[in-house]
Image 1: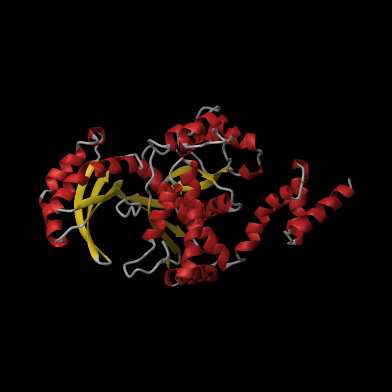
Image 2 (image 1 turned 90 degrees about the vertical axis):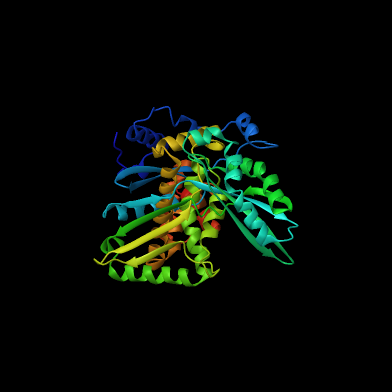
Length: 423
């Protein structure tokens, strides 16, 4: 069934009503999200997932609305402790929706493993000796995972580099593997272990590191949105958004925060679906380094030919639907069911769209009222709870803090005391 991500009044519902609305809109079993009521993970399952487990740590799971991706409406699960992230993504998706939403594409899901060979007398000659046995090495790697081959994946290439490092030059073989719907670390690491002795024998050196690289530059997802300037706040706001992006493109100090804003959305969806946030973050920040070695913006903002603003984003998305926490964590399975994605490529493309939405929202806020006003208004709920407000006191206390434009802990406690004194 077609989904509608434009859920008017969704934020005004209570938690139970939101879950009911989501399951109804997604056409999934009403009990499918019941696991989210308790954080979705019991201590027994946690003990099987990591070492020395002593409990679980809950993170709020929200749903971003208004997303249209490649002509289809999508509801986006986001796990984050930071206020304003879900609201910002939803708002930017609403703006993008007026011009068709987000258009996404991606490459094949190719991951790479590296095999390092040390103590090589002739690195240049060693590189060619390994390449001369390319078909043999690929066949050896392929034999480690015949199931992956049957699914249409497997080894797609072998390249060899020489890497000068101080007084020695290392020979480094790269095994490129189409990992299909897996994140791929286990598959490529197993292959790297298998080929390392033969690669070292050919290079006439000693094998050392045999592991995947998180610089997943052959597994890229891209997102594009055409933004109506009036929906953004007018032509002047659009121009200032471009100015803000240009600083991020030119200045690593600004780029670090600019890209962190992108990752606010990216990491929230990656975490919600049980994928490896550290791998995705490492790959994204490595991708932000340009050919000259300068750290720069992952996104672009450009004036369109018809008076619009065109926003684009490209980043590696090493994520999967099989293996790891995506299968063992009940809440991750529930979150994946919400998205409706059926392949890792689709999930990667949705991640790119969410990252771009988050970026649009952040740069627009910076170009208008500043980031702090909206953020602190949403953060006021946390401040109210920290001040000791009971559930029925949170809303009026938040309203008072917003009206005062004062969000300090002492001020919140004083306002709460006055409220209680009038009861």
